[in-house]
Amino acid sequence: MSTTFTPDPDTRVHTLPNGVRVLTLQLPRIDSVCVSIFVRTGSRHESPRLNGISHMAEHMAFKGTRHRSCQQINLDAERLGAEVNAHTDKDHTAYHMQGLAEHAPLFVRMLGEIVRDSSFPADELERERQVILQEFAETEDDAFDTAFRLFDEACYGAHPQAQPVIGRRRNIERFTREQLQDYVSRQYTGSNIVVAVAGKVDVRTIVREARQALGGLPTGQPNESVPPEFQGGIGLRRLAGHSQAHVVLGFPAPPVTAPRHAAHQMAAALLGEGMSSPLMDSLRERLGLVYYAACSADLGDLAGQFVIEASMSPDNIQAFTDEVVRLMQAQTERIDPLQMERARNQVAVRRLQTWERPARRLEEAVLDLYTFGRVRSREERRQALARVTPRQLRAVFAQMLAGPVAVAAAGRLGRAGVERLKAVAAVRA
Picture (cartoon, rainbow, N blue to C red):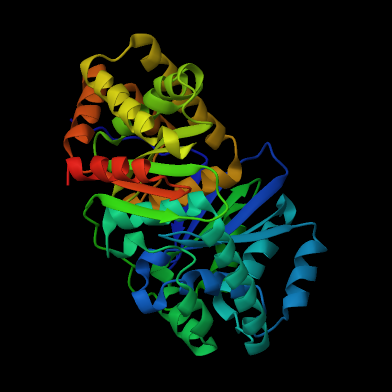
């Protein structure tokens, strides 16, 4: 049975003639404002030869426009007391300003110029290239970053969903100004852009500013992607100078559009959120096998991953994997009512914390627009969580144990640990 939910009264979406959507969350009790421009393009929209170009374009966007230099952009923002930031992900790029609510129209105008008119100065490109190469080197040296890159490859193989956001070194070294301009002109189109504002603002003013800033962009086509198939497999890399093994185990999970996606979110909280969860209580408190562990369900618009990550001595890898399997198997047999209550409340509190953080709520709402074409209401999310049953949770764990698994590890990896991880990956290959 389907249910129609009424949108939250503080949420408004206006679509401009060229497809740009203007999302406003009216929060009259705060005097600050969050203004962002989201573009539906990221590493999963790149070819292998262009992997990393979304991230480089984001870095370069603040380095100058047709009207202002890099220095003028920074000064104009900071004289208003604004914080400026940006980020790139697999499925989107976003540009942000936070400051006084009265300056929201100015922020829309300034970010619109950055998105529409970045000039990618050649001298700035060479300097920023070195900055990104240093960032790349840092991720290469970080065991968890490395493990998660290997994990994505084990999950999705050659699919663009597996590509790292930062890209490949050889690509970073050779991207040209012309390539950046061409990529942005193709990807930064009206149907892929959301202007998002949260705070005490006048909606009509925000819509007017968005129209003036971005209404002239071509409509373009939505940047769609083909859903990846979870493959399963293994990726290992020894890193010098590390005393610990950093291990990631993962199983396929449904996309956020699936009817029962909330069961996987609660299953992750049930298994491994908090020190009283079975994962942490057993692995750390009782057995002392790890010094860090976590469990999460990363549910995107195309696919999902149920992830268990941990850091440990390489001598503990076999005991760690054996205990994880045992704990998951136990959940297929019985869901403890107290543990389920804990998990349900922890997810609910996490949702409330997101709701109370304007920038996080804004991003979540924009991703809803990209995924569903609408913003899910608070009540819709609450009911999805409330409907999860113990039977559904048992089925989630049983399904994961019966299906493929992706395994990745980086750092110090002993021979016995490597063989054990290979065996885990091979069981359901």
